[in-house]
Image (cartoon, rainbow, N blue to C red):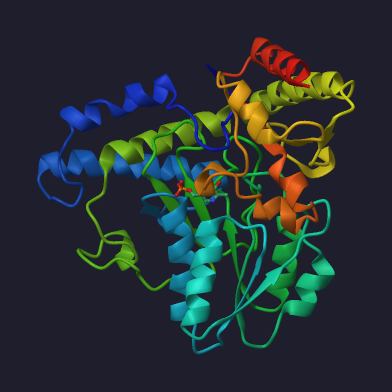
Length: 369
Ligand SMILES: Cc1ncc(COP(=O)(O)O)c(C=O)c1O
């Protein structure tokens, strides 16, 4: 098997797993307990919080632990919508966001909020003029992801943040795919969703960055013991947090080296694939992370390719919503036809991908065609 689906999830890096282990067995105290067992666990959680904060240039007090980016997106959108309802009931997002953003917005619509879903341009990027025009006096929040999980498209966060800041509108960024792929400048961003399992950390742990200066708050969506400044109750999962901290520290430290390696693999793939006239790229690499490639076939179906190459772990559409062969709504929003979207696949490289993996993929592609 060759794993080429790093955008769906990544294995836990062995350095991370090793770091986590003692926090499952010997350091098992509840971080909220005042005795020595608890305090030892709390100290480890504090270190991890600092590591996660450092990866995005935030203050540790701005990091709220969650179970992953799905929960962070729910907490950011619903939590701010509820808390700032006196300002208005209008939210702006994009049609190409992750289901955890779109479904949360759709639920809010059922409860009386109005949501504008901006279409991307053909290249997947937000149209900043459209964004400006969509903003109203009662707009509370704009939510736009940094790196799209299906296409790798990078949205111009700085420009969006300038627009929202000028109008005093909260700006939320789903950065689930970002850490270890590209840097994130938090200036003028109010809320950022993060998760560990796309960055060689464990599944089931994430965080929400909530800006402190000026102070932003969200209404809790889970009630209980009042952990995480009352915004997210629940016993802190020390081992998971230690894993996320270590994974983010490594990803941050190795970012530039990893980016170079991804560019080399991507460039090799693109040079070879350009010889194959029945494959079209769905992404334009001017504004796309090098590790995600989305392509479509013109003479075979994506389903046929995947079925005839079970040794290749690649994805049609996004794994998070793969219900059979539904055409990808992200590609449809970028203007692809139903058939074009159905015949597209996502290939995503990562830390353990090698040139040999890419060669095998290229051979499979040319054999199939
Ligand atoms: C962009 C994006 N947002 C959110 C999520 C959900 O993250 P999690 O699996 O941590 O809930 C994913 C992936 O699953 C994603 O790719």
